[in-house]
Length: 210
Image 1 (tube, rainbow, N blue to C red):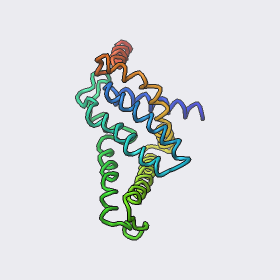
Image 2: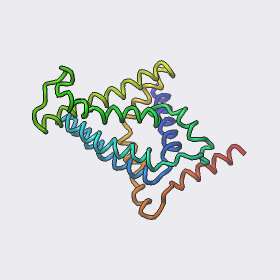
Image 3: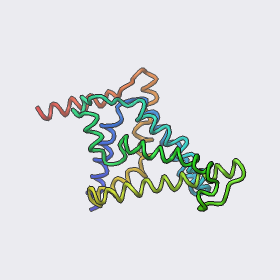
Image 4: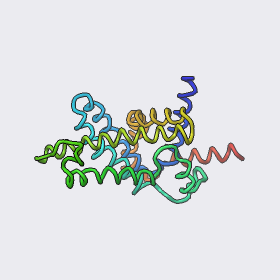
């Protein structure tokens, strides 16, 4: 069972990489995101609220900026798939779901500013530092909630294993991304905008199907 679980994890990682990480800019931003997420993981032990601020303000913004602004969204010749098809088969958060999640994240401090007690759920903030820490609490809940919500949703629309594999992938992505994309910034400095390795992979796939 463990071997099968790890194989499914490998497949989800590989599909995520080959479908959604062609851009060297996106890969470089994922490297930055991985570094800051690792720092946030350490900070979780000492200060969970600071961890939430790092995770959302640095890790998530850099990570999602790479997907939204730099990743190609035309026809994927490497994988012979349209952007719409990739969005439809995406296991986790596709761009549409990410828009919803990031909108909730962005709206949280606005709601907290207008409702200092969050409709009686929190102690009212009085200083800028209080506001920052209360916002961090909301972002921590949103982050954990987004992970749990999609995991449970996958239990029903796919199966329990797929949900648990995806959750494991998300939690361990910072470690994997750090190793996988650590050379992306140097490749970008050499002028590579698109990962040439993915095109080589596509050629190999065509030879196998020929």
